[in-house]
Length: 118
Image (cartoon, rainbow, N blue to C red; front, side, top):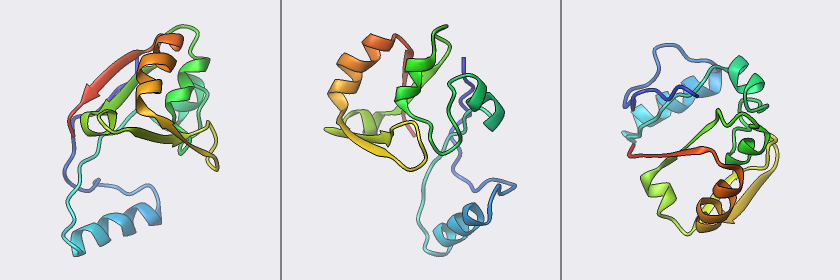
């Protein structure tokens, strides 16, 4: 099962990329608040669901034959009509009815679904 961190309301202590650092600097300067959670490290993402960083998607559960992947949705996201996600690549994105993901796709792949409030 994947690790999901506690909800973080502060910038990371160490930035992984220059863009990540600039994002948090801009958010602070503009006084934009946000919350985030962290998931598994890059190596585990590639091994377990076969997904590269930046391409994490609900569709990764199609590769999870051992049912180890946990799908995590924010409460506000799951309440929306539409859900946008990667198609499994870092360059392709899809728009799908959220209800279709929850009531058709997830039962088809059988992962554990968790709903959190960030």
